[in-house]
Image 1: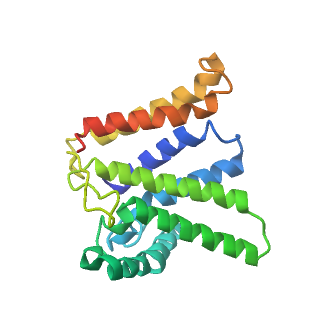
Image 2: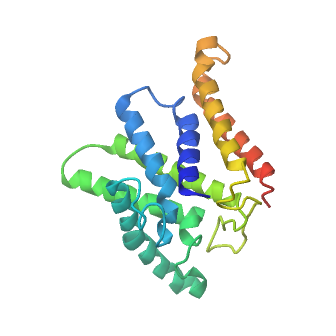
Image 3: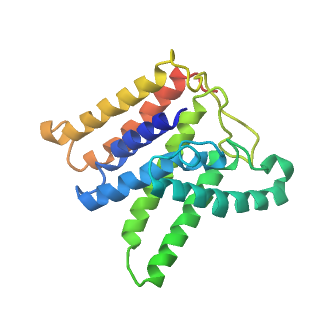
Length: 229
């Protein structure tokens, strides 16, 4: 899918998931949506001409982050996997960074780097870094879910498995309105979640988990509509 669609899907999905769980705090929301923002673009650091590295990017900070992921994480990790699995792990689009092992390794390395920097500066930001990294991972995960709906698809367990899942959405096809419908559905679901406490639709002790229940259900519907198999 297009970069703007990845961004919208990740921000709306992450908001739906995390806002009921986290206390309403400007600082928390900044960390949350920053992580979702960067995570939504991170898997596309595996291509030279992506919305965030060679075409101006959404911000200089995001571009720096993508370059760092590409040259400090993606290429070294690819070399390790090439030594184990051979040429099929050669750096390419929708390869390692478009897999669950890839985004997990990427998230762990970034978390360790941030924790090391905070420790070196004697700044205790463990909770803030955790929020950012979890949001980053979620943004990347939604990116993978969105690409699963396209014709090319992705290998979720690459390089551990050659199995790929793909759908029927053509990236950039203007006549296919399904990505727009997904965005609208997530937006409406987010509004629904926000107003649940006001009308007492669910008990207070259940409300924090409402996004955890609703989000997977919506993405299952998206997968069905895209004929993912």
